[in-house]
Image (tube, rainbow, N blue to C red; front, side, top):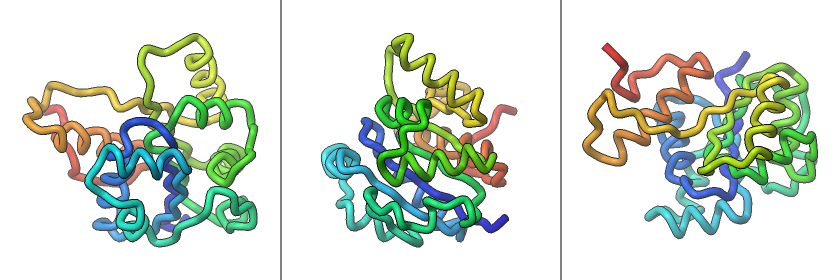
Length: 185
C-alpha cells in the first residue's frame, strides 16, 4: 500500500488540527489528497492565521468537494486510508448513513467498503444520543472515532503541544511511526 493518505477537513471548529496534520505529513514525505468543505474554508480563515490557499499548498493534490470523478472516489485508487480532521457532526452523520452526496463523504465511504483505515477526529461537546449512535455505526463499519481529547500527563504548556498530541495519536492509529508527541513513560 502506498504512503498516501486522504485528508478531509470538514466544517467544525478545530481547523488547526487539519492544518497541523497536513504540515506533519508533508514533513514526513507522505503523499496527501485533500478535500476541504466550504464551511471548513471559512473556519480556517476565521480560526487560524492561514489562508485556504496556504493550507492547500501543504497537500500533494487538492480536490473540489463536488468532484465525483476524482480518483479518490474509486476503490481502485489505493491509499493507506483517510482522516477527517476535524470531523463535524454533519459529516459524521453522512458517513454513518452512507449518504455520499459529496466527495469527502464518498471517499470515506470508499475507505469503509474497501476496509481501509478511516479515522474521524470528531469535534463536538456535549454529545447527543444521535452523535453517539452515529459514532457507533461508523465504529461497527470499521472506522475509528478519535476525538481530540486533551491529555495532561505530558504537562503541556502551549496549545501547539496539545494539538501535536492529537496529531501523534492519529498517526499512531494509521500505523505511522512518529515522535510528534510525548508518550507516557
